[in-house]
Image (cartoon, rainbow, N blue to C red; front, side):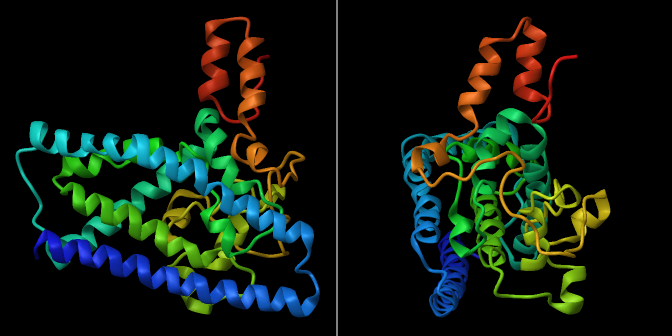
Length: 281
């Protein structure tokens, strides 16, 4: 398989999930219209979610496009073997990328510095398909770092890009209340039901269901939770703003205040890298 055909495959994956997301969005809008809930606050919430693409795309374009050159540098400088691009290796690469995404996602919940970015995705009190594109502006940095092991394993940068894109694209359709539970599929794949749990602020739902495509990772590592009652979406703390600037940088002001008031270098370190909510004894 040539790199050109491989690039075409990436485009097709993106297109398929874009069309699925578009169809779900139309259903959600129609449902909200007929129920009379498509009003000012809901519309502004959707606009706030979509607005996060502005700093995210700007950072990706200006910084991360060049930063991803590190994959090529590592591949050429430190890896003397290459896994060929074939159907079997694409499937294997996707499996590895999905496994790494589980840990990327889980660690982003457990390290405060990373949480300042990922919390943007969780900060909406609504749950709809637009939530899928609600990103912190600097999340791409951690995604780049966590996938470096794939390069060291011998996967080409193109295969790593495909794995990242495919895992993220798959999750687009998960952000909806329109689709209920899907029976036996729920045992293997991540579904809207599983992901609704992940966005829940209820104690029983916190830090559960980190999966990208396969829910088996959560079952294996003890972070699985079945959906029972409808979750209360959003952050645990009181945050319900539709102001784009506040949404983009919601966690950074408090982090800055905590760092300024820190009384030791250890406290600075813990404020940055301990779990969100850590306080000195």
